[in-house]
Structure formats: C-alpha cells, structure tokens
Image 1 (cartoon, one colour):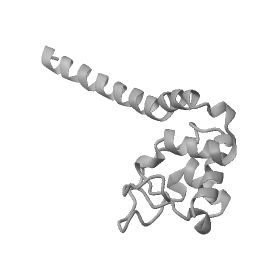
Image 2 (tube, one colour):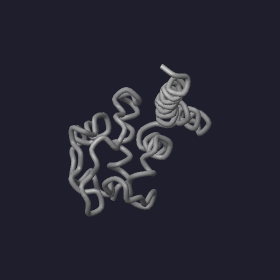
Image 3 (cartoon, rainbow, N blue to C red):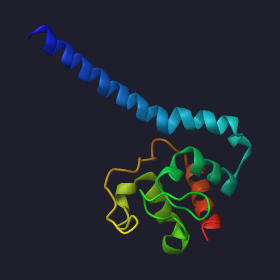
Length: 137
C-alpha cells in the first residue's frame, strides 16, 4: 500500500471518529453543561421539560406553539391531543417506532431524529411529555 493511500485511509478514520464524538457531544455533554448552568437540578415537571426541549435540540427541528418555528420535523403544537403519554414517550425514546408521516407537508425522513433512549432518563422523558401536554395548546 502506498503512502498516499495510507494517509487517505487514516484521514477517513479520523473523520469518522470525530463525527461520532461530535454526535456524542451534541446530544449529551453540551446539553448537560447548559442544563447545569440553567439549574436543571432545581426544576421539575413541565418546567424541566421546557429546559430540555431547548437544550436537547428539539427547537432546531420542531415547531411548537410560540417556542420554536422550524420546518424540519413535524409540528408538535397540540401533539398531546393526537398522542397518548405512552405514544409521546415512545416517539422520544425510539422515534423510528412512531415516525410521523407528515413533516410540514412532506414525508418525514427516517433516522433523522436522535434516539434518546440512551441519552435521557425516565424523569427527563416524563418532564418532556408534561411540557408538551401543558404548553402545546
């Protein structure tokens, strides 16, 4: 194997590793730090859910009442009228199980939303569901 090919393959390997590190930081360490600074430990219920909705990237893809206005993912305004608590939890933890068929007039892209099952704990998921129920009207 020539030197150029080795350098190319090593470069590709580094890019792949950096991508996975970026994903880990984007959905875990950076939000954890932002939540710590915002005092997440002292928040409960829908108040904690609102903080998580902001820090965990939901606002980047979803329209939700007066909080965010994005067209990448489905509109979550009044989502609690359409889905039960369990369906909302499933949609957060494993979005592929309940992917919406409508993302602002177009089919939703499979695999686009992160799987939060390994990122959020039960209390955080419940807080997000409460937030979507209480503030989504």
